[in-house]
Length: 488
Ligand SMILES: [Zn+2]
Image (cartoon, rainbow, N blue to C red; front, side, top):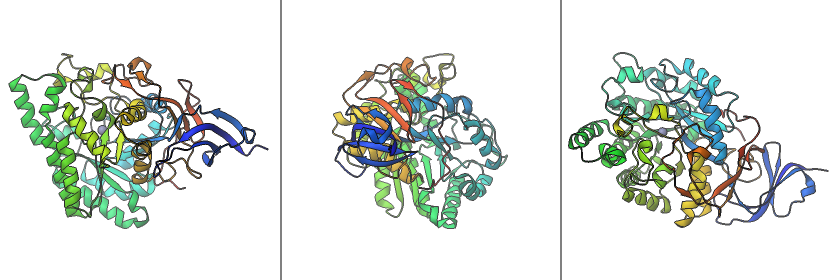
């Protein structure tokens, strides 16, 4: 009699919370892992997959993506979720806001969010959920309904939008953000967003652990002034110029403001997104000491860990906050190895060539911000992490366990009985060189082009079904919207 639907034989199981990587088989029934043990008989399963001694990681929970920012949401969901599957990512948490880009509309989330859900439905190869940004004061009043009706428990503030557009200077914020006449997207709004989220945490105490606020920390006034200085000076170009135009202390300052506001409003669940520099990270660590009652989480992107202003392949590497000089990359790794980083993400934002570059292809200030890279997150972190002494246990924590706990996904993030059978198999000894033509993403270029990645994803399983195998995306798009917190 067959006890299991699927048996993944002969893998080394990487789990959060333990440095042991035991050789074992993983048995799956339906969508769940039901046993992890050595030598489970192949005759007990309907289907057997040979794991070939590869590492089995919990499927990656990529906590920071941007489906639908530059391409229609339905299109990005279909294509960019394939890049997820290719990279061992089984859950995408993706940001949506009202205003220009994304759905290119304003209005209430009561109207916009069902449109978002409809746009993505039935098209994704991986499970997904949305972080939403309250852009206008009426959105703050919608927070309780977003939580209870739609399962959206994480929110975002873009601190620099007050005086800056997505790609550079702008003084037409109401038009860009499509917020009502007379409203301001400024520090006072951020304060009221925090108060609104904290009220919701008090109203739903049983969900409060899963309700949090994420902040993109950069300071518009500093960036505007430095952009002018850099352009007038004219000595720097490309990514080096872009980094200088949004200097690290603009991040550090925004981190301190966000932290004080969290203290003032009593909102303890604060996620500091994509810290890119030594100064940003130092400010974040300092704030955690200054405000020990605030439960800070610190995020770093794989882009900021793998590329610097000179190694990235041209201005395709323009992103906010910018890629930095090598010293900052090394500082991020030191903090990561010291345990001061909570999760690593891709910040995947598929921006095709036609959109990405301006009339002068070499002018970084004309280019759009953001690029894809979810397919490089896990293999890149395993490869570079191993070379730097990062344990595989920490990789599982940084890419799956920690974000799953913070963002209300109790069935995700571990390889153990009862968890969703989301699994990424990795050959830790097979390296390869990034060529964007090999990627499932529709983005034609990559700032990582030519980079050697030290490990290879060989298979990805979503709730017990293979979604990537033998170098190909597999099956139908059966990814599901995760109404959070999801039940065990
Ligand atoms: Zn982002």
